[in-house]
Length: 463
Ligand SMILES: [Mn+2]
Image 1 (cartoon, rainbow, N blue to C red):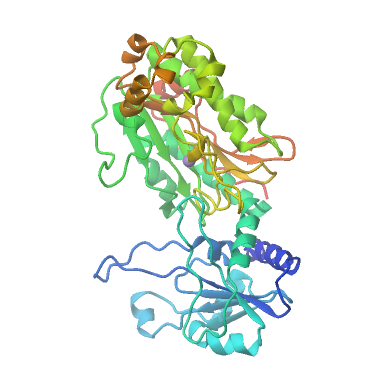
Image 2 (image 1 turned 60 degrees about the vertical axis):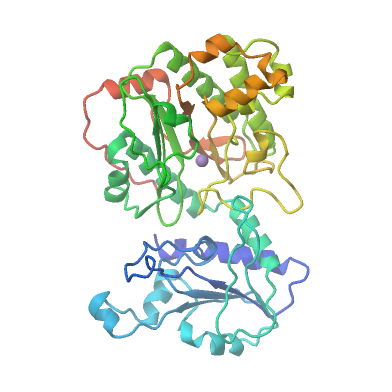
């Protein structure tokens, strides 16, 4: 990336927004703290570093242990980097001068972190604006910048709201990186077993966006399979459905893609029926997305298509409208339709302050409750799963069990699940599909029948 493409624009958006806000006094200075290099437990082995997301958004800095400041009135930016000991040059490599970082990150001034107090006091700030607020996905509070000698009472919540709001919609540069993460991750999905190798080797991606979820057979109904207690270690059996949810990360920007397919390359009639039901809801949602639609309505649309298709398959019987009233859709899709995507895989800002999640099965798991806006990047990830304990609960509930044909359902116990997850960018009149993998049953079967192809070349995007 050229330095002009660094997040200069994000800092400018931030200053403009702050100046327009009540309660921001003249001579306010934003102070952000970057991520710290941590070690594995009590050892001296470094944990692979990944920059803190807000800091990355504002400064684009890949090094650890930095601070940044922005003078809101002038827009002037300051980067503080650690002053490294001489021994660093022996063990870690060249120690760069401050000018190196000034050019690399297109900031106005670079200083050492040990000088942060004197540099900031020379600005004679009326207020320091720091970042503090709650992430609506995790419930965690982001860590406020702090350093020895910080003076006065920093104002924190204001900056958080503004940063979150600005991160909701993406700049041209951000969209370009997200297109890249999707192009590489899409190709890597086609390599399946060498997914991570492809991301690293062909895409220059040091991280994946999250722990790969690779469930097969019944495990494909475990929504977040692949954790330490279930480390993607089941032997794949002939006839299994596979559900592989994997995304590469580049320059701290995420991708989040799921492919579901039969392990042996050929769908059984039941596998095809469930797969095509999910594909139908995915494409119905994509056809409906445009600025101004409610994301909760998109979730409901997916539920409705699933129920209609489950009636056709024979698992359900009766009126779909009545099924919706008892939230039957959430038995088969207990998670939300999709979420914001950006520097974080569950990107910030899903719910504005004062708007709570809708307290209904399924919808309460939806990570975004806003109207869809141009330049938002979202995942569309409907799924149908056969999760034994949810099926048993529904069968024990007479309001729901009256719609279920248990004899047909019994055939699907142990089936696992199907999720189809694509990433999209919202445009002025619709959406741009960022993900490009085989999606129809025919495409998947044809792709899996082909002998191993050489890696397809990565064509760089037009500038
Ligand atoms: Mn996702």
